[in-house]
Length: 125
Image 1 (spheres, rainbow, N blue to C red):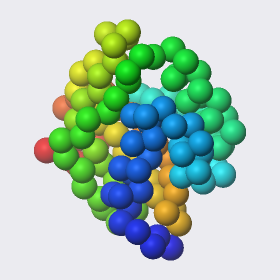
Image 2: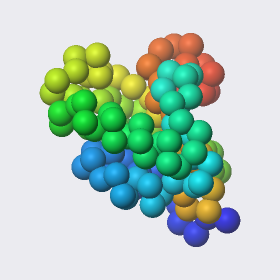
Image 3: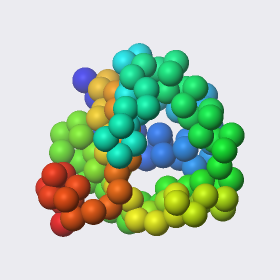
């Protein structure tokens, strides 16, 4: 059972991404946390997710997610916006994210390219 708004949990997780706070990310993950980028599972447990984020942060400079809209459907949170990164052009641009929240922690963080097909799949405008 969540004691805080699922949107707040997703925003806290994203703040940890934007500040490259590994310990903060791990503290907000469930033990079976999944990290999924463009439908490819990068990790499916807390320790593998930690390692994936550590590798990612080692390879990027000033990576940030900027949300323009956030909505929740019970424990499922959808974020719309863009990401920016100083040293990886491919990480700059519009993106979508989803988070599944369980007991105030994230069981899943998923990143998508912002396409019409993905918006239809997520039922967002």
